[in-house]
Image 1: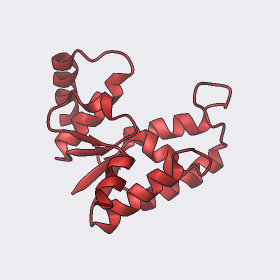
Image 2 (image 1 turned 135 degrees about the vertical axis):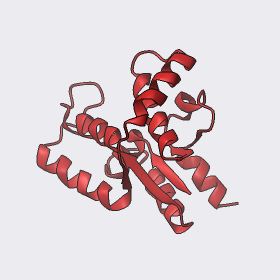
Image 3 (image 1 turned 180 degrees about the vertical axis):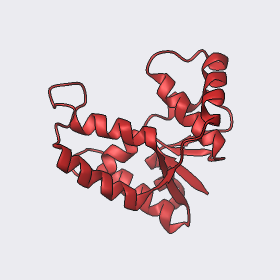
Image 4 (image 1 turned 90 degrees about the vertical axis):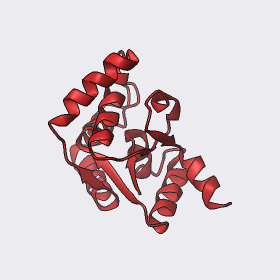
Amino acid sequence: MRYLLDTGVLLRLVNREAAEHHEVRAAVRVLKAQGHVTVMSFQNLCEFWNVCTRPETARGGLGLTVDETRRRLRALERVAAMLPDSPDTFSIWKRLVLTHGVKGTQVHDAKLVALMNVHAVSVLLTLNAADFRRYPGITPVSPQDVLAAASE
């Protein structure tokens, strides 16, 4: 099964100072050990780059240099495969935002869901499962969910 890694997961995966780093890393390792494939999107990486290079004084910014961000991006490219963008994403995204009344920054989540629909990816590893529960056919799971299931 393929798991899309949400941007928050990607950020914590390569940031050893993040509180959730060890949990996220362990969850990704469990998924891979179970034979699952982890994937990411171009949008995720744009959001990742934005947060990494945003000044620390700005909301959520890490204040990293372009070179350090590039190194972290390379690490992610070794962990997850890239889902290619598709022209079909727009029509699905449009249907999702209209059907679910999506507003504001959550339009980005709807775009990820649209891309997941295009590529038949149904599971999302995320730190914000509640943001994705409105979408049928998508199963948002947290790193804690993955680790709990693995220990059963």
